Amino acid sequence: MSRWVVILAGGVGSRFWPLSTPRRPKQLLPLIDARPLLRNTVDRLAPLADTAHTLILTNASLVDPIHALIPELPRENLIAEPKPAGTAAALAWAALEIARRDGDDATMMSVHADWAIGDSEGFRAALLHAAEVAEREHALVTVGVVPTRPDPGFGYIRPGEPLPSGGYTVAEFAEKPSRERAVEMVRDGYLWNSGIFVWRVGDFLAEVRAYTPEVAPALESSAHDIAAFFADVISISVDVGVLERSSRVVVIPGSFGWDDVGTWEALLRVRERDPLGNASNGPVYAVSAENNVVHAEGSDVVLYGVNGLVVIARDGLTMVTTTERAADLKSLVDTLPSEVRNRP
Image (cartoon, rainbow, N blue to C red; front, side, top):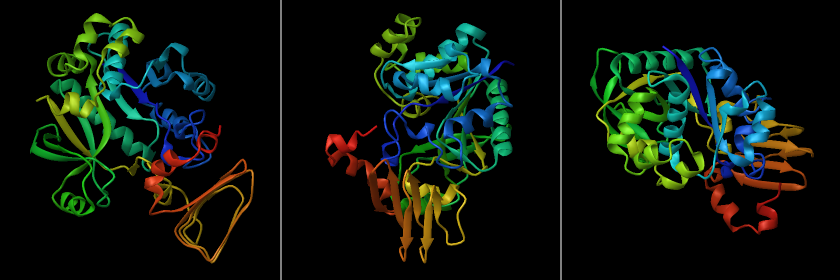
């Protein structure tokens, strides 16, 4: 079987302001270690597919920076979405592109560019298992991550009946819950909806045509014109537009240290920390200060006697909040004057 990797690398990551900007979004930042998230993602997936069988979908403005970061990727494999149109449209276009080059039997493994993965080998093993199930059962497979905590920031999947493949039918896709409901979900065996999807491109496109009127007409009318395709679709997520409507979905549990690195607070989980529990980058000096997240770029930062802060300093701009409020950062950014909010 021919297998492809598809990496979704659009978006700005406003919850990582002021470090993340439209010109330098979070997938291009070294948030976990010294290398950008996207570089780590490509290298992690290299044993599964070479660059000729790797597609990266992103914003038009990021094509050049990504090509500079991943120069070995063929330029035609870096696909610029003309406008945001939801993951159903993005993955449908990727499936069309793979089918054109390699036929309907090719398998695509779709991931996001901005994840932390603690166990790369376990991650690849889960993708390979999902590919085998997708190819054998003609199923749309998603890998549900076994939760390590009741996190209200993630969607959840309730597994249904067990299958001989080792997967399960999907009984329910659940939106982000309250904290109290998240505790109940973890107790009841729900999985995190990771956004890892694996399927044969022909099977996926058949389900889009059957169940996704927001995208299906464009598959016929604009299948060879990316600008027209994205103009013709209605924005919808692949979860809502395809998976929740299809009867061919299988979920496979996975446990490999996955985190979507959605907020500054998440770096306390995924970065190496100092003896006081601080996750820092750059010239940072912490005295009697614990469990802080600090990024210093172009200036020194000194912490004394404070706990649970997020301090980001770069190019003459300093932002300070708490780890608890870090998830609300988008609300802050929306209130700022444009000259502050839109600094390059």
